[in-house]
Length: 404
Image (cartoon, rainbow, N blue to C red; front, side, top):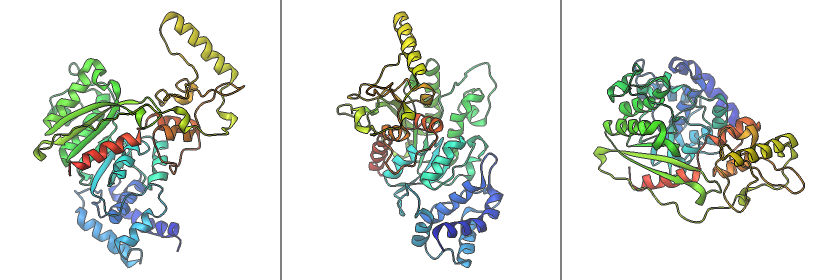
């Protein structure tokens, strides 16, 4: 049988069992993919441990596959599961991690490049889930707030690019037990960070790795950052962070806040690597012969010119100029598809154009094999919300050097 037919037959056998363990807000395919990857990489199953023991469930599923001649050994099964996957892990990983608020898998890819394998992923956005699946061969679980932390497999590193949302210290009822545990009152929007922390408290990974916007330190007058730092410290982790500009590794001025927290009992102090060197030129990643569909209209370009002029005169508001191709681009954001003002590429005898999907992927350091969404709006949103893969890879390798 062809590989696709084998996978389809495996799924037919596994789905009825997996349905019993599918959490609200997720699809059964997420459970099936996690199980197949767990068998292929010798990792733990996601499952409702109140219903069945993880090890017994895994043995039971493998037995069914053997009886149907769909499993002979792990090496062959690894090839069956990952043979057609664009960005496959190593068969024998040096560490295991989970990928929360996964987006399109940029953080995953960086840690996978460092030799790790993902044992659980979660992403709420449906379009991002599809891009994630197409490239990593795994459909992520959905709403993390609906997932029992005890069902998540054991892991060495917890990775999360959680949303930066307000935390309230007074006047609002606490929304979850973890917030209460850490002595904080949080509104409904602030609970997503505490969903990360309830997983941390249940699974006690060696490393917590978080990525967020550059202004995280100053968000809500510094209250958000203090809440995060204190919660991580109270859970038994040494907290360290660094604001990093990615323009020396990709041609984009993308500045982000990275947090690395190491479990205190491991006795390791983390030192961030330096990112030095000249900023890279935007022209180094541009495509040739770009379709005219990316050229902005006369109306949009004139609107940019008029608004820029008014805003310059009054000293406030956005400005939209064509990019200097010898310098890095401005930060590409999720709203880039609206009007492209963050990065407009000059063209001879034409209005400027927007970046293509592939150029956005290159600005974030994704490999050329990465499959971009064909629709422009979701592609711009997904890459704008993603991370710079070479930065993540360098940080992951530095963490790995600590032999954790």
